[in-house]
Amino acid sequence: MTTIPSTMTAIGITSSGGPEVLVPERRPVPAPGDGEVLIKVAAAGVNRPDVMQRKGLYPPPPGASDIPGLEIAGEIAALGPGAQRWRIGDRVMALVSGGGYAEYCVAHESHALPVGALSMAEAAAVPETTFTVWHNVFERGALKAGETLLVHGGSSGIGTTAIQLAKNFGARVIVTAGSQDKCDACRKLGADVAVNYSSEDFVAATKAATGGTGADVILDMIGGDYVERNYEAAAVEGRIVQIAFQGGPKATVNFMRLMLKRLHHTGSTLRSRAVADKGAIARALEDKVLPLMSAGTVKPIVFKTFPLAQAAAAHALMETSQHIGKIVLTVE
Image 1 (spheres, helix red, strand yellow):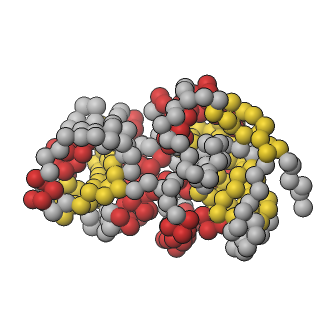
Image 2: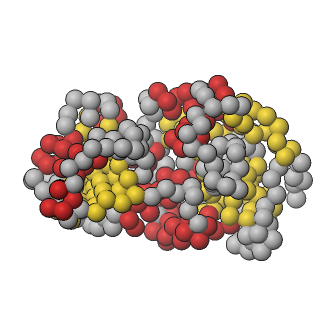
Image 3: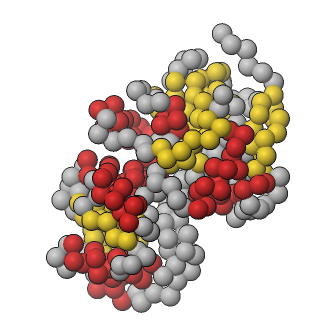
């Protein structure tokens, strides 16, 4: 059994600002509480919420670590009181509410999933996106076989996951992306239609691709003026699911379409959800999604990995939006 050190390298945020404020520092190794496990981190996913936190726009919820990082993969190093599901040495990937950019991180045992045949870098790219896509597209959005899903930001970690899952469950997929390369990458992953939003109107393209009826489910991380355009692009009884507001959380919208088309506009955040809620999503993933990953029909798309100490470079890349899929930090 390996000894757990008292301190570890973690990435601190020295002040709100650009990528350069992410600096390696020594921190105490956290102790797992009731129902929690301590994971020796092998890799950690990089996500937009981490960028928002670094800028001072998305503080961690009460009780969460101030170290960024919402998803990790590694080996169980210690069990907290009452933790029963895992054994020391088990290889897991886990959703965490903070603390991922570090050599050790605590997770609730119910938020961890077996790594299976994935590499640690691939496994670290799974939790945040699959929890988000499963809950929002399939649970809140109730996407069914034969329906059409419109995904904004198709080449993002969320987008590449949504394309693969929706196709595997029998839906048609339309995506928006910002370049020809990104559109091509989305088609390669299975998207039926890819709309280059820098030169095409996604509303017109969605209508054209659906014979005028529109999309049954729309997964949107943009907000702003996309809200009204989503209402235009949606089918009668369409479900629009909001997961972020990269274009701003306020919009001027003609809500008449909401009534005339009987639309549902919902949304959710993951980080502040109750432990039991996240545990329920994890069980659904284990049942419905992990078998697809084991079979290789759904796989995380890792664009680039960086050593933990180069977290600033990873964030700088994310902010260029040049990547297709996920960016991952690796821990030696």
